[in-house]
Structure formats: C-alpha cells, structure tokens
Amino acid sequence: MSEADTAGLGYEQARDQLVEVVKELEAGGLSLEQSLELWEKGEQLAKVCERHLEGARERIEAALASVETDDDTE
Image (cartoon, rainbow, N blue to C red; front, side):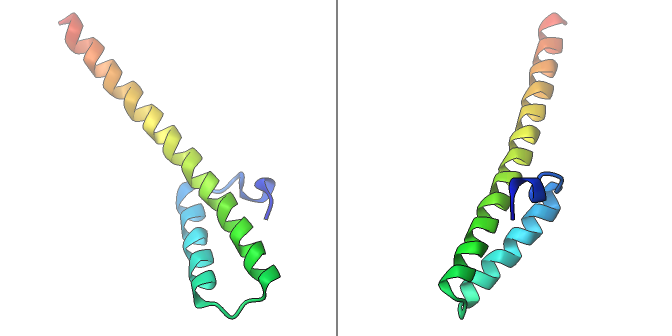
C-alpha cells in the first residue's frame, strides 16, 4: 500500500484498517514477505492516523488560544 492509497482515508478508516493489520500480524502463519508487506501497510496507516491527530491537535490549540485571547480582552 502506497501513500497514494492511504492519502484519502479518514482517521476512522485508517485506524480500523490498522487494527486489522495488527490482528493479521499477531495471528501469525504468514510468510516473511507477507509479514513485511503488512508491516509496511501498517506503517502507512499509522502515518495517516498521526496526520489526522496532529491536525486535530492544532485545531484544538488554535481554539484554546482564541478563547484565551478573548478572555484577555474582556
């Protein structure tokens, strides 16, 4: 799975797919090549989740800063 394949995923979609990847890896019974492919897919999905979470964190920080600024002007 390439970055282009995961770029349009929402947080929930990426998270759910990542959970499935982890389950498959934990179940075992895969060849080394299959395991590596799943690991790489998981890494891409984790990056998507991180980007979404960072975006949410920035929005929260901006909202808090706005509230603090409003409080300072009153």
